[in-house]
Length: 97
Image 1 (cartoon, rainbow, N blue to C red):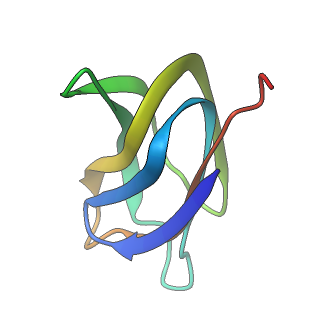
Image 2 (image 1 turned 30 degrees about the vertical axis):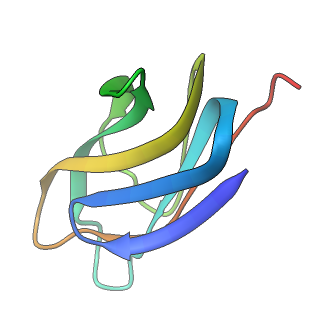
């Protein structure tokens, strides 16, 4: 549905209209080592950021599955890292089509 990249503790995706999502794929830029130790994925639901999943260590690629949510904004929020996090890509999907 959408993909983005970023450096920093938050990486956000804004969709053109609300849609159902149930998967996220995060990839860390690991050329200088893995930096992310804890993270959570949040969706904006009824005007409030709501945690849909959390995890540890993203590394090269991490696929997160979660209960379907209807939203137009999603963010990857790094809650623990060594140095500034570097996100190679963050993408969201609806696999329940």
